[in-house]
Image 1 (tube, rainbow over the protein chains, first blue to last red):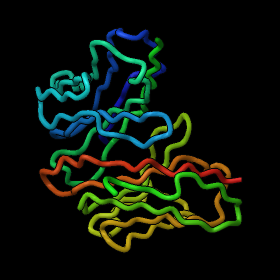
Image 2: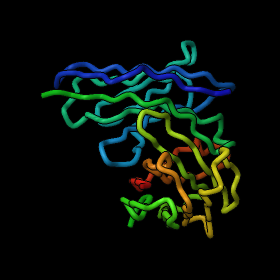
Image 3: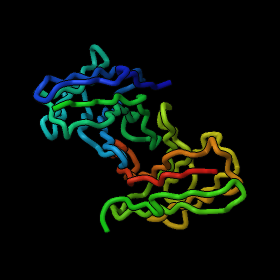
Length: 114
Length: 115
């Protein structure tokens, strides 16, 4: 079945460092891909998405490119801030949203130190 | 109110109590979901409702009973829970159907503690 694998955390960085959180997926067809972020004490918020190969999703300085050849959707940010400290979830949805389900990775905790 | 709201935000209950969690979405969506988020475990999908009909039940124990009276409201009725049911319960909604990409919008969650 479909699955998402993301790097184990925690990831600890200093402010203004470069961030990469790896995400790879296994799916039949052409899924849509998402990154969600969960700040402490809150629910999940959609950070960015990409719905077809080579699409780049971006938001708040974060970017991720849908790479079909490597089945990856790595999250990057050029300069992290303390306020970016949160748990980041990679997720996929089946092609066209037919089954209403999102498959989530296990989440990666990011801690940014001043 | 905008987005997805959940009440209460925090709940402490004994194992013999009966309580209900409420979720409301103000986005005009037609699908709603309950998830369980426990410490150090992946997010667990519990129930899916599509146009008020339950389309998914991921082997959830019967002490959790969902109810979806309309496309905007979703409840989770709780009775005779166990301490291991303590977790953050998240509600989400989406616009389902082909071409919708199933982008889900989440509420803030209810932090449940079972004593």
